[in-house]
Amino acid sequence: MTSSAGSNNGIVCRCYYRETHMPTSWHILGAGAIGCLFADALTAQGITTTLVLRDCAASAPLLTLERDGKTYNRQLASTPASAADQISRLLVTTKAYDVVSAIGSVRHRLALGADVVLLVNGLGYADQVAQIAPDITLYSATTTEGVFRRGPWDFCHAGQGVTLVGAMTASAPADWFTPWQNLGLKCRWTESIEPALWHKLAINCAINPLTAIHRCQNGALATRPELAAQVRQLCSEIARVSAAAGFESTANNIEHDAFTVIENTAENRSSMLQDTLADRPTEIDFITGHLVARADQLGVAAPLNSKLLEQIRHA
Ligand code: KPL
Image (cartoon, rainbow, N blue to C red):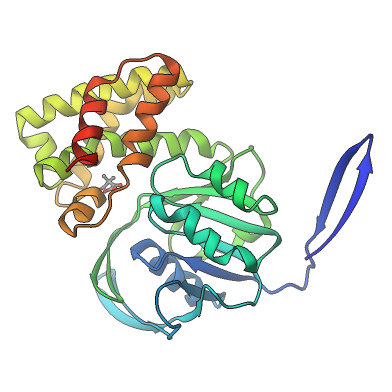
């Protein structure tokens, strides 16, 4: 990528020219279930894809993935975060609390104007990313793909979902998105990613904290009447916050949508329950924490959400 800077009525304009011969390649930061699913799918399409590994000496991981009832292996390329070669396209699939430090670890490698896609649960980290890496082009994504880890590099793609991708300001699909439509995963471009991210946040607020506190599968939130009543109360609070924040569709549909997800993922352990059971930090500050902060700003009461936030924080 080359760049030129000019001045227009005192406003400094920086123009980026992407060289058309530049080969498509991706780096993936966050070698968990979703990161490895995309690493596999991109590599399978002949797109050079490299996992960025932060805590171990770079070795080439041999991925085992069960998909559509078949298990296969794929050798993935990897690089240590500390390496020097440039990154022009980065897919971030870390935990929400890790996004900023993970991007910080490869900041020295990011090309001017690099495309960075945040495919991460929750909200509230994008501004900090833009602060530490102001010269990147930021995209966001949200997915309902169901993948779980069975071993260090062993994953099962248990449920096909949809991945929505977009830019924070409405725009036509990015040039790099075309091959994403042939990954064997359902990837769709959306001109309104913010409502999609908010909707996913709302679903996670309704499901994740309760499953972590009660150590239950998602389905129990519908079958146990006392938990279903709490889901309904959470949803009515979320609906009020959503309406005040201008997310009408979530405001109108959250209870119906939350129970649909609960039904469709009845056997799942939510990501927050998995984190709790594995004694890892949870993403609560970027899920319920974000909702409660927004409720406070908007002067909307969200007492049950606030209570669950404190319970998980102090668990
Ligand atoms: O996204 C999820 C999560 O676990 O984080 C849900 C939709 C609740 C599925 O388990």
